[in-house]
Image (cartoon, rainbow over all chains, first blue to last red; front, side, top):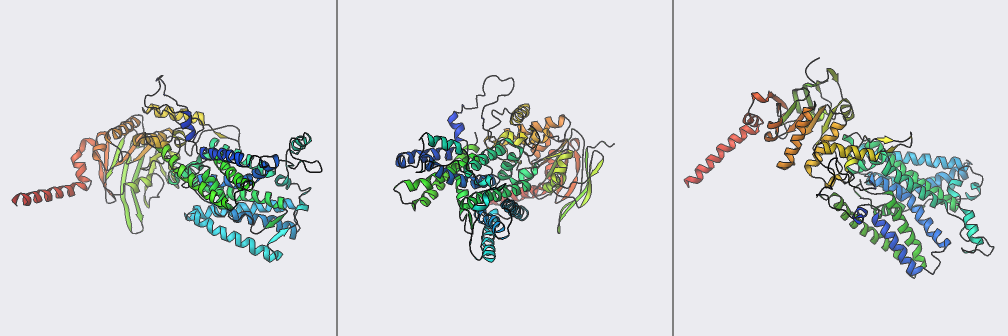
Length: 375
Length: 265
C-alpha cells in the first residue's frame, strides 16, 4: 500500500533477482486503488468538454457549481471510504445529515442559543451517534449494515418527530441572519479567495453581473473542506500508525487483534468520523440555505458509498483510498451538474450512477485478484 | 531458579460441560523445541490459546521465568514474550510485507500528535529480517498475497521473534505446505531455537515433528499422555500414541481381512 514500489535487493546480491519481473510503471499504477476513479474523472471531463464545452459549464461559475456539488458529496464519501477500508458500513450518514441540521437550527432559532453553541452541540451529538453505532457493531458483532440501517430509520424519525413537536413544521428557516459575527459559523459559510475573483472580474476574464461584480464570488467553503479532508485522510491512511490499523482492522479483524491492533477502538473512531463528516456536510448546507430541512441528506449515504466504491474501496474492507473516493465524488458531482448542460434528460443521471458503480465493482474485483495473485 | 523458562502446570480448561483440557503439564527450557502432538480435537488449539492469553485456564498455573502469571488478554502474553503464530498467521493478504510485519507495532517518527509511520525504516527492517532467514523480499511493499505459503509462515515467525518472543508457539506451521516449503520452515524453527528461544511446535504430523523436536508431549482427548525425550521414544511409538495408532492397527487388520475374502472369491 506504499506509494512507492521500488525493489530492494538484499545485501550482497548486486544484480537484480532473476525471479522479479520488471514491473512497468503502468502496472504499478494499475495496482493503486484510485486509478479507476482518476481515469473515470478524466473521461467525464473529456466527455463534457466535447458535449458541453461551449455552454458555460466550464466557465468559472459553472465549474464552481459542479465542484461545490462534488465537494459536498466528497466530504462524506471520504469518511465513508475510511470506514469501508476499516471493514464496516454506515448507512446512517444521510439521516445524520438531517439530524445534525435540526441540532443546529432548533437551538439557534427556538432556544435562543448563539449559533456557535448549536454548531458545537451538533458535533457533540454526531460524536455520540458515531460512538453508539461503533460500540453496537463492535460489542454485538452484528453486521454494521443492520446496525446502521436501524440508525438510518431512528435518526430520520427523531429528526421529523422532534422538529414537528417543537416547531410544528418540517423546516426551520431564519438562520442566515445569525451567521454574521458568529465566531464559528464562518468556517462553514465563507467563500474564500474573493480577491482573486474580483481581480479576475476586473480583468474581464470571468463573467460579471450587471453591477460589475463577478458572477462567481469565491471558492465555496465545501471545496476547501473537501480538499483539506482529502489531504488529511490520505495522510492518516498512508503515513500514520493509525492508518495501518485501519487497513489491518478491515483486512483481517481476528489477525489484527492477535497482533495487538485495538480493532474495536479503530472501528468506533471511524464511525465517529462518518457522523462528524455528515455534520460538516450539514453545517455547510444549512448555513448556505439558511434553513434546516428534516429530509435533508436523504439517500446521501448510498451516494457516499457509491463514490467510495468507484474510488476503489472493496466492500469487504482492507483496501481502498481517500483520494479515490474524492475522485469518485468528483465524477458523480460533475455528471449530476453537467447533465443539465447537455440535451440529455436529467432522469438518466441515476442510470449512469448505477452503471458506473457496477463497472467499478467489477474493475475493483479484478484489481484485488491481481494484487494478491501468487507468483 | 529452575531450569525451565516456562512451565504450564496442571492446566485445565472447561467449556460448559465439555472438558477441553485436564491436568496438562508442560515444561520448556531455553533452546528446546517441544512438539505438541495430538489428533484433531485432542485439545491442542485450546492449550495454545491458553498459553497465548486468549483463554484463561480454569485450573493450574503458568510460570514464566519463575514468576506465576495470569494473562488478561493476548497482549499480556505478547508483552512478556510468548509469541504465538496461529494457523491463519494473522497476515492480511492485501497489505504489504512491511505493513504486515509491523502491524500493531509500527515504528514512528516525528513530533508528538503528528507522529508518522516510519515507512523507510520499517521497509529496511522487514527486508533485512526476511533476508536473514533466506527469503529475499524483492520488494517489501509487495502485497503478502503474492508470497508463497512457506514464505508467509516464515514472515509470521520472523515477526514474532523480532518483537521479542522468548517462547515461540507455532500452530500447525507445516500443515498447509508442500515438502520443500515445510522443510524451509522447519529449518528456520531449528535456527530460532539454536539462538535461545523455546519453541512449542503444534502439529499432527509426526514426520515433521520428529526430526526437529527435542521432546514430545502427546495430547489425547484433552489429557496429556506424558512428555518424552527424543532418545526415549521412537517415531512409530509416537505415531501410535496419537490415538491414530490403535485405529490404524485395526484398519490394517480389517484391510487384511477384506483382502482374504477377496482372494477367496
